[in-house]
Image 1: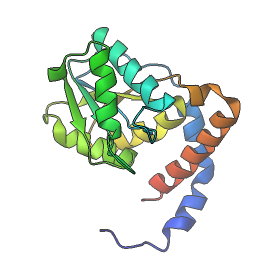
Image 2: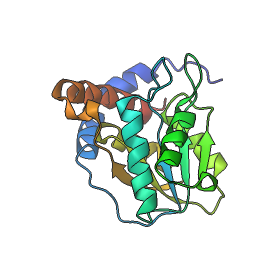
Image 3: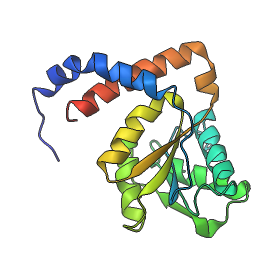
Length: 190
């Protein structure tokens, strides 16, 4: 476990402006040019009754469509369970299977509890020659997810997803602000 760095909050505050600008630019990204080696579906909330949130459903359905369009030959779903099973990766995998993605094309990463973990553990599940990957998430999350993916050795391609949360203006503002702060901490070394 890493020790607390007392300078981290100050560095994060100092980088907040550029981080917010980066998140805003990321939210306007269009889908990248493929194909790629793999599709990584970033985790999102599973509701207490075990059903996917609108974000998780939108991400998994977008990944299934991308797979069927020839975007990549394999898909990695990511995310642990937070309060009780099933976990985010397991629920996303079920959506992929229901959408006709073959079980042998899907790997699940069930350990992570955040975006950095999603990508670190996904990197460990994929062969070392897998470099070019689609990152499937909502626009507010793309800039930080792509930055972290580069940090762990991927050449990431954006695959922005329209979700119920992204369509609501109040949620959109909240999510952009939240990811801007998260990006500031990422850039500050968290």
